[in-house]
Image (cartoon, rainbow, N blue to C red):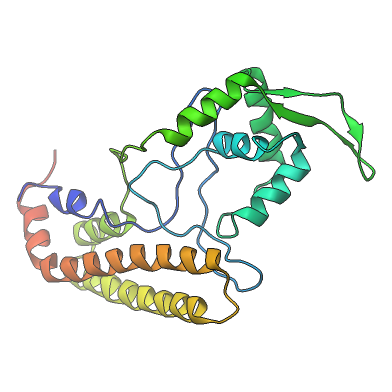
Length: 236
């Protein structure tokens, strides 16, 4: 096994949620975030990074505008209601993305109107915007060539700087943390008042956490082998 193979081996099993960059000119992706789980009307927190490139904020807003004219506040509110497992959009992110879409000719802005106090600017999808949205909607998303695995990175650095005991201890504690989180999701999806959106979000999380768990078990079996490889073939 070549040096660094361990990192590549773990590349498909990931923790943390980081959206990739823009998929099209003027279309931006939300910033990365730390996982959290709450129970209320929805799940909050997108909790695993997928190997498939993810939707940009711009395409999502275009999709919401497909139903008709909306101003920024309505788009933010509709996003948060329709995608309960996603991180709530920040108003600044909505308006910055709308402005990029406008400059790209994908949306048009009407004259600002006063709605419930503040002035609001309605936006409408242009024919070019509809074409772009339909193109994106029917396009197969290619698997990303670069997917980070922070678990593998931490294990590798632990072995390089502190040795096998620390790496093994980290993996065992991480395994316990994953199992605890999986139990939370299992309880949540089993509740009779959970919505279908919540159940699907929990299923998504459980699938990815289970992949992480299987990677952790494989890594625990190979820690000694990796440690030997890292120290016998130093990178210069």
